[in-house]
Image (cartoon, rainbow, N blue to C red; front, side):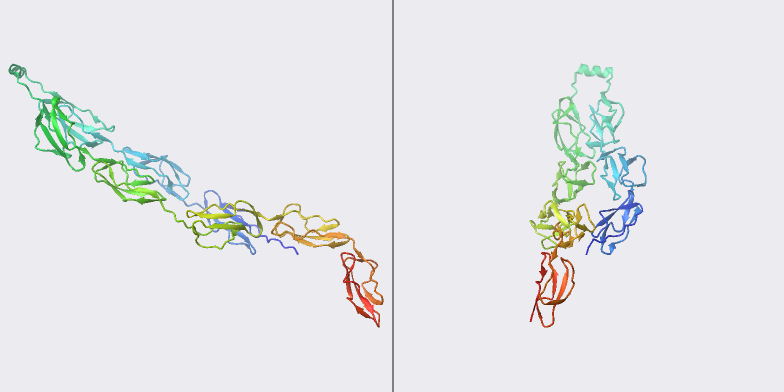
Length: 503
């Protein structure tokens, strides 16, 4: 008898795709693959079973996955913007005027219909500080001005304005065309009176115009050298203190002004903030979100403090991983020796054994649960093969094969002459060896079966060879002792031994 693996019929063609298979015999599998631009609908893997290929042919449909226009506020698209993009299409993001790019400009449409690594266009905050005009002041005064903000310039008493009365914060953070305050011209007669009287004109410091940023306690029009002034900044501004008028109309320790309290974008390792604008005022609040794989430790919202620092910034710490592992890793040609469970404790080790028809060819045969994950299963199982069947002198072999022989392959021997000694049929076993040693072909003969008093012998021949049989009977009046049916054995002797005839 010869047992072979069942074969499955050839698989049909897949329109806009094909099958990758490792054979078409029992246990082999075929994997469906669609051409680029198509997606699979149906079963991807089919197995050759005893009843043929399981499942049905899948279908390769035109991919319906698209990306809509990138959702980035305040941006432009290069090249021209479209409403739909196919996977692997790329575009360049350019921010509108007044915005700056945070991230990489080039993005690609992903296979899931989502843009990969979209940047942000954040408002570019351009600010100008309080303009300084000698012998003059500005109104209103806030300490921080944005692009295109305008203020008025007013000269102190005794000075005339030379230049525009309004100045604007430019796109470079500088005031455009600041004017000057020049001393007023005094008539010749009044100058002569001053000269003759030799009246000393006292030096003064002008009262600062703080606008809505702060207030001056008991303000005066001017302060003479040595006089002090108390400034209180409003909430959200910094710069309160006491200032003294010094020579050359200079305030000490510095020019009185109330500056807007601002915080820059907070930095959270392994996290991000939302929304992000680049500059925040006192009491502004932002949310903190951690990246995948990290948990938030601290408040989810933080506030810009009165010192320009974020209050109680949280941390993003790696997520704690459970020490337990799930079901055992699978292997296409091996299975665990140990009992299977749904969950394994940390440190558990599983040993694997190659399936019937396969033999270990390399790699470690075990895996271990470490920190909630199985180590990589590196066991290699190759198909069992036997060496080519041995030749037997004087014999013919059925289905000879010269290459490596698969598991279960069988051959039969038939002697041209002589008797076949041994197993006629041998097959390749799961250990990679033949089920029995090869037989032999021998010329074996047994002597003429002479039995004194015997008669009526059947199966008479001139020569008795291995396997020939004879039947012996005794003449009337005699009784047979032994077996009447004997066979010529492989050693040239009758089996069982010849009987005798007795009275």
